[in-house]
Structure formats: C-alpha cells, structure tokens
Amino acid sequence: MIRRLSIDAKAFCDRLRLRARGGRGGRGAVAWDVTNRSRGRKPAGGSGGTGGDVIVRVVAHKDALDSTRRFAVGEDGTNGGPSMRRGRDGPPTYVDVPPHTAVNGTVLHRPGEELIVARGTRGSPGNGVYRGQGAFGLTASAAPSDVVVDLEMTLAADVALVGSPNAGKSSLLKALSRAEPKVAPYPFTTTHPVIGVVEFENESELDVVRVLDVPGLLEGAASGKGLGDDFLRHVARCASALHVVDASCDDPVGDLATVRGELLRFGLDMPFRVLLSKSDLVAPERLSELEGALSQYNVSVASTMSGEGLGEAALALRRLARAVATRGPSDGRVDGVEATRSHEDDAGRRRPPL
Image (tube, rainbow, N blue to C red; front, side):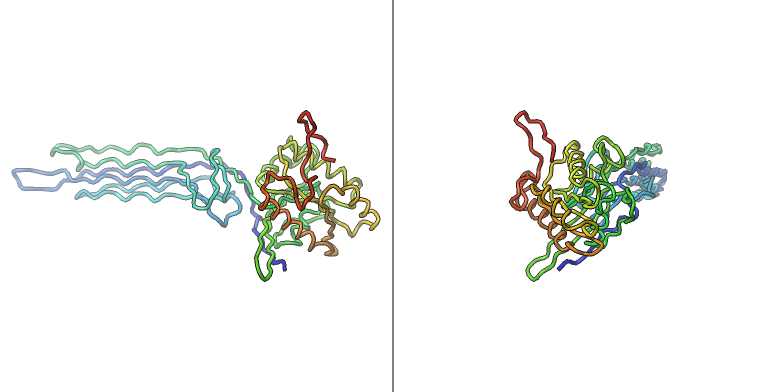
C-alpha cells in the first residue's frame, strides 16, 4: 500500500543573504553605598549585561529558507544597577534553517547544529568593580559585530526526478505524493525544486522514499543554460536518479542522452533507472520499440493520465532507494543491471551514455 505525504514548497527559497548584528552590551552603573562617615562612600555600580549573539540553527521540519528575513539582530544587554546589580544578558536571536544548509561556506547538516555568526559584546564595567572611592570606571561597551551572512540550502532526497522540460516529472510526483508542483502543458512549468515523500506500508515494514523534482534540463544546463546548474546542485545531494522520458516526443532516446550528458558534465554519475512517461499517447508498438532501444537500462512505463504503471513507477523509486542503501552509492549495479552508470574507455575518457 502507498500512503502519500508531502513537504510544502510553495514559498521555496534556497539562497539568502542577510545582515546579522550582535547585541550591544549594557552600560555599567555609577552608584555608591554610603558607609559610616569616617570611611565615606563605597563604589557599588553593577556592570552591564552582555549582548545576545545571532545564531544559525538547523531545525528538522523546515524545507526552505525564510525569504522575508533580511536582518537578524541580537538583543542588547541591559544596564547595570546600584548595589552591584549586574545587567541582564540579551538572549540570542536564532535564524532557523533546514538541514544541509551552508552558512558562509560552513555546512550544517543535522538538526540541532548551531553556528554563531555575530557575537554580542560584553557590557561595560560599573564603578563597583574598581577599588577606591574615587573610581568611576564608566565606559561604553564595544560595538557589536556586524556581518553579512550567505545562506545556501541544498535539498537531500533518496531519488531525484530528472528529465527534459515537460517530460512529466511533476505530474508523476503529484500522482505519487501529496506534493503540489505546478503542472501545465508547456515547458519549464517547474521553476523551483519540490520534494514529495512516498510511504510504502505493509504488514511488516514501512519504507519512506524522499523524491526531488527539479526543473527540466536542456543541453548546456551544466554550464548554466536555462534553469540548469542552479538546481543541479540539489540533484548532487540525492543518492540516485529516475530519468523521466516523454515517450510521445520526437526523440525519447536522444532526450535521455542529452540529460545524461548534462548530469555527467556536472560530475553526477549516480545509479539510475528510466521511466517512459505519457504512455497513453503512444501506440503499443512504439512503446515496445523504445523499450528495446533502452534495453540496457532498467525501464518502466507509466501514464499519470490513465494511472497505468504508477504502481510500478513507485516500486522503481523504492528499488532505487533500497539499492543505494544496501550497495552504497559507489556501486553502479541496480537490480542486477550493470548499465546504470556511464562507462569510460581505456584512456579514462567518458563515452557517450547511449
């Protein structure tokens, strides 16, 4: 049984620059305790509290950066008081981010990890910390740090859906999960990555497969053409790929070769399977011909319109996730078929994928 789940990605933001400033320390107090007349006055001013830090923190159930947040400021410490009362420290200000977020180049992977990006300053001392009745010691606290923070998130999933524009990736993700990618009959409908979660439940176990849908790839995507390399970095965080190929297009085999080539040029040589989509638009003889042309790969056939083959498509996702989990991403074999990675010739140069 397939139970559907989703991660909301409507307000998707994967890169963000914000300004962070630590809290300013409080001022120390000038105060006196009056003793007896022979001894005069005793300095008793308390020191100011420390300003709060700005901390980037990883939280588990967050799937995008907050695009509305451009500033993060630590709370100031309060001023010191009489009778040696120290000012209150300013609490830290947290910037919550998803797992696998780079903070000025330092990657935070697991929930609970934190990184201080702007420190608050210590409060200035009150006159009570000095000896001698004539000691005042009132000074302003140092200016807190003020920095620019670059946040860059990468989505981690078990399987990436890759293919040419309008190949049917988003329709497949929508059919197999409750994710809500935009679906329309024109290219580049998907403009940002979307994650869906497919749960397989039976009597003995529960499998969860995280599936990433990225915008369609054109020739030259690895060099930045179209929406290319900006989203290939998300694919790089996935363990495997399902190539979705429009069976009704003019050259399905050529489309697969183009997408495979762009992945390889970006350095992505991961285990994969092939799904021929939109099978309801293709004659059975043509489907058989395509399956024969792609016989060196693991090929599934499905239609999101008729629902035919969706169960097999879901199982293909689970097989990919399980194969990588059991064999490791360095092994190119998936379900006993070796041709799931590109091959290299004797000189170490890549041969075309098809």
